[in-house]
Image 1 (cartoon, rainbow, N blue to C red):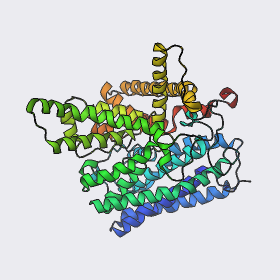
Image 2 (image 1 turned 180 degrees about the vertical axis):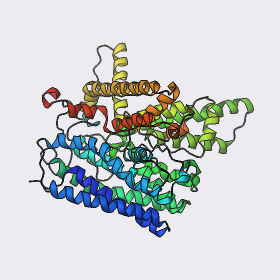
Image 3 (image 1 turned 135 degrees about the vertical axis):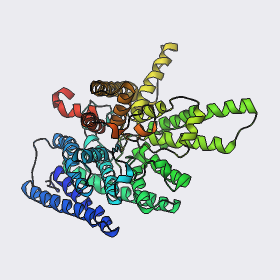
Image 4 (image 1 turned 120 degrees about the vertical axis):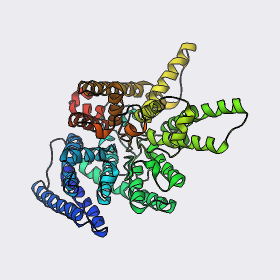
Length: 504
């Protein structure tokens, strides 16, 4: 028996309408009655629509529940943003529906790209952008653990030695694959929501203490835990909290390196301790290697030439490299206030290429990050290391246990397939954008930003002079489609499209 008979799209519509009441209250308190009415009327209309749809679809049972929820994941990214854009169009008179739609699809997919200058939007509209990104991140997290993980897709295929798309169990006390997907969604949401709310509240309080205003602290807290990177400021680096705020956000971003850090998140059946977690070890290597390449080069040359070193400038440049590396590796896109100094110390004409590569790597599996993901990078590296060992010792036998053997064989093969699909999608988007008149640098930058879900990269990397607000409607639609593809992952869409017999 289904305990939660409402379809997923109806539940998402009701939740979205309820969230619109938050900026409506904020607008009323801050003395913006026109903005408050825009959000309140939109919330009322969508709540009525959701109630009627709920009555009409109560107890609906699809033929294939798992495929139905995969279809709902794709449908949510297509159908919800136009509805979420309604209050923005009414609240900002000069805003077109196309601009509001792009903002909402960017927020819901946790990309964080914006085409509207921050000073042109009132505070409640900024709050709405942050709430959409925050709720979108929670939806992605719950969907990954409740829908994609039991089907052994979305990165979990690297953990279990089963065929791609087959069901895989999770270390939960209740049944995983036999339960209805709607029940699993509700159970996972209840398990994750306390930690999600608690971490957001802790980050908000810490940023307030560090010196941010109430709205800035709340939006940066929501943008950190959801890795959306949405900010009410022109640049995150201009936040009043300064270095103390960056330390707080750095601690929050570490949660995106592995789902094992998030309380309530279901875990795959792994028998290794946290210090041997492949995702964390890969992230640690990147966090050491990239800042060393960016910050130490100039410091060593200065020490050699002048026999002295400005310690504070060196530490500041190093911190800017470490913070920005973690921020872009988790596809958040916050830049440190010391990043300009890091760029100077790097001595490289285009250090933004590092950010481009970090964003495409991504964070942990079943987190809110985008990109290829750390576990797939580890699988490819593990296979490469093993092949090099076989060149010198052809008769050697590799150990490491069942998980390591799986990572080096089936896991590496699936990771390579995903990497090729990611590259093909990136190349196809580049061709389409080039046909629309964009140059190569702009096309590759915007395509990588959309597919990896790192919207602020277009403004920070300086690879190209073009920005999101410079685009016409055609390229915006193409990049919005790329945001959806990057969020859903091409491999998961293939699992949805392929018949069950093809996955055996």
